[in-house]
Image (cartoon, rainbow, N blue to C red; front, top):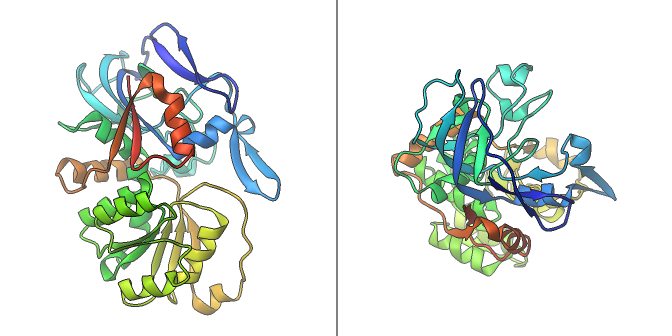
Length: 351
C-alpha cells in the first residue's frame, strides 16, 4: 500500500510503499476512498502547538514517533475483517471515528473517548491515519455508515462536522433563543452554519479576515459576515443579532479572536474555543464574575455525537460545504494551501 508519511517534522511528506496489513482480532481493514485535510494536521506536521511566550508543545513529547501517517477524516470501503469483527460486511463504505481512547479510564467509560485521560489512540494523530491507500481500524464500533453519501463529502464530518456539532450542543437552548457568533469561516465555521440549520437554530453572524471566506459564509446562510478589523464590528454584530450575543464559538483560537469573542458577550454568555492556532492571551478577571460570562474549550466530540450528526446528514438536513478534491499524491500542496489560507471549505484527498 502507499502512504504519505512525516519523515521529519516540517518537511514534505514522503510516499512509502509497504505491505497491506492483515486485520487481526476485531480489526477492520479499509481501502481508503477519501481523507480530509484538517488544520490540526498542520500542527502535527510541524511537530506541535504554539503555547505562546516561547513555549511549544511537542508532538514527540506526546508520544508521536516518526515516520507517521496523518489523516483523521477518513472514509473507506471494508475489504477484510479480523476473526472477532462482527456487524460489518466486506464492501460497505464507512466513515471512521478517529478519536479512540484507552477504553479503561473514567472518560472512556462514560463514552467520551475523545477526552481519554490515559493513553489516547487517535487515528492520524497518535496512530496511523488515512493519508494512505489503506487503513486499519481497531474495532467495528468505530465505523459509521454513510449510506449513499459521496465519500469525499462525508469524510470531513469525522472532525470538522463533529467538532462543530459538539460545540453547538454545549450551548444547549441558547442556539434556539437567538443568533450566535462564529469566529472563523473555514471548514469548521461553514460546518457550524450547516449544523445550526439542521438543528433549527436561529442562525449566526460570522467573523473572518478573508473576504472569500466571508462570501462563502454568506452563501451558506450567515446572517452577516463581517471583517474583525472593521472599527464598527461590535455594533454591526449587535445590530444583526438584536443585541449582544449570548454565545460565541471561536474556530480560530488565537489571542485576538479570544479577546474579541469574550468582549462581544452579553451578560451570562459563553465563549467556546475550538481553534488551535495558538499563543497566549491576557484577560481582565473582574468582568468574568461581574458579567457572569464563561470561557471554555471544546475538543472534537464523542462517538454518540458522530452517530447523531450522521443521522442528520443522511436525512439531508445538513447542507454540504465546499470540497476541494485532490489526488493523494498532492497532499503536500494541499497542506501548503491550507497553511496559506487559500482553501475555502475543505480539501479532501482521493486515493
